Image (cartoon, rainbow, N blue to C red; front, side):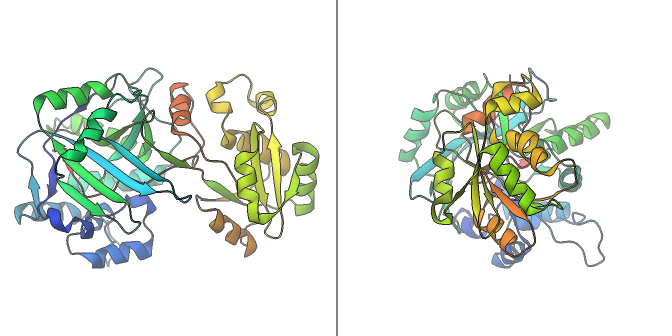
Length: 413
């Protein structure tokens, strides 16, 4: 079972200036956004989360630890007096105009090795490069700069408490560049801390965002334990959200594909094998979302689009009777059944994006041969896949909004 503990958070002293101090998590920041955040404020968290490389091309995080300690000594950052949980809420509007909220609790989550019966579970596979980058940051600073994001099936048990916080003053309140309202409450009362800890304890917690950071934290903990170092390095800063009650948005990662297979061969196979039919571009996404097939896909070639379909029996014929939660995912059907049938075993190049327009642009400009747009997932599906013991392919889901960086930091030393 997962163990979430209160801790003495490190926070910015200038709570009234927070909109200029926070930043997105490192893996969604473009070079232009990084430059803009550097210019926004001399103490913006970007200087910790995604530091610039040195002029000599040396280790990019060599000076970050010194910078963090200087901010502490200068009073830019302060350490809370009490061990606390931090309730974090986001209010936002989706692309279709719906108003939503995501609220949960941030705490120090005890690290566990992954396993079928573990209290913390992954839901997708990772890549080595980002883990090396994040490990360099941990070694330099010894602090969790940004939280990972985990979800669980809690049947809405915390919802009344989270709703009631509307009547309390916030520790942080800000609106970001995307008009998302972020609020933070510090929870220090013993009875409330015990209640928050109990709510998350049944688990399991499924990592929605932050797989690389979690696996990096495990590696850092092993290093510190082997060296006999003290501190809180056996935990990681984690934002925990109940998938049963909060209005989580899980966007699909669409694919742009480059291949040597001729277009005529691909479209012919789509029609004959996957019942593809041409669809008008102006409402193609709506048709995709409403199609009743087990696995519908929107293939776009720039000048024309096709709605193709695969069945659950198609997937079973390839992968066997693996857990239904996993094989029911459209992205599994795409990579296990559809693309291999269309393209064979030849090499392909993939580009991923949550933005359908970006995929269309990549195809229209001739950089890629075709795009595949997928349906959105439900947060509960992600939990169900993880608890089945399977992992999704890389770039299978995109939780939005992201938990921003800079609301609270967690020291590991």
